[in-house]
Length: 313
Ligand SMILES: NC(=O)C1=CN([C@@H]2O[C@H](COP(=O)(O)OP(=O)(O)OC[C@H]3O[C@@H](n4cnc5c(N)ncnc54)[C@H](OP(=O)(O)O)[C@@H]3O)[C@@H](O)[C@H]2O)C=CC1
Image (cartoon, rainbow, N blue to C red; front, side, top):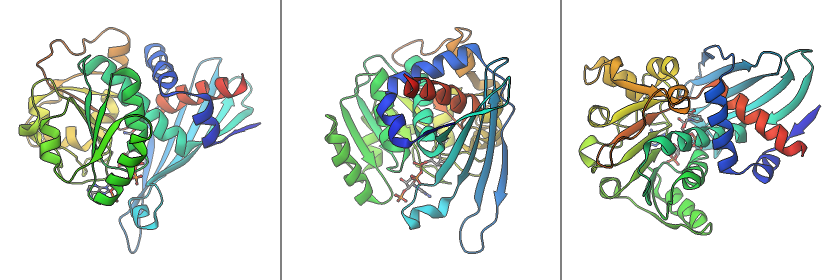
């Protein structure tokens, strides 16, 4: 059995490789039951979430991700999300690889956002705002830049020092990157706003969006969490990673439905529909779009198969 480390994933698979692996994965589909998630109570910090995400292909591979989301990890200087991916042969059941699930998760999540942006962001998107500067943030910047000509990146984080530090690292990759404490000003000048935080309150407001902006929402994976206000959902054409996941778990969408700001029928499409050509993406330069992801086991599975194939070459 092969062990695939975080370093192997970065060495052998580019951001664009994973976008294409997910495009193919969503277009062709696989068996992927809704994930199981369990609340793990903590005495002295916010509850953690335990996730089990299986997927398989008839006569092909099978895989499962075991992951945990621990909001209190920020104080420990550890990422909130960590995990392990196990890949098996679906015919014989024999395990074939164990993959660093923490890196796989950040990379595949960023690839899903970039895949959506490839259908939803304006072709001339150059100015990106990154809200949050945790493990997801650098992956999202690199993935979006693999599908759109991103040049300028403005990073906001509740802890501004971390935003400035990430801006320094991103600048070394060739982007014009700066940290900011003016989220409103940054959003008003953005083509693309990507949010990856554990916020339970709106950070980005609908009246800050100029015409043509695309909003990418990664953070809120529970109905009690959100990164945008109802006005964002009202103003934008709404897309999700999967209907069943995002409309049940994605806080920005669920809360906007509950308040009556939008109806479930306002969700135009998901990555299955977009990649299969069954749903139209952006239709004009002036419209605002939003993509809300909560994660889908197909994303881990498609990324895991692509990673093992690339590492094995
Ligand atoms: N949609 C999907 O498929 C996936 C979603 N996620 C989600 O994305 C989010 C970010 O993940 P990741 O980058 O790995 O996490 P990290 O723990 O590495 O970073 C968390 C980031 O969120 C910020 N943050 C935490 N709490 C708040 C708050 N209350 N208000 C504003 N900002 C806050 C942190 O700021 P500070 O530095 O100040 O602590 C930090 O920038 C998480 O919610 C995670 O569950 C992750 C993977 C997959």
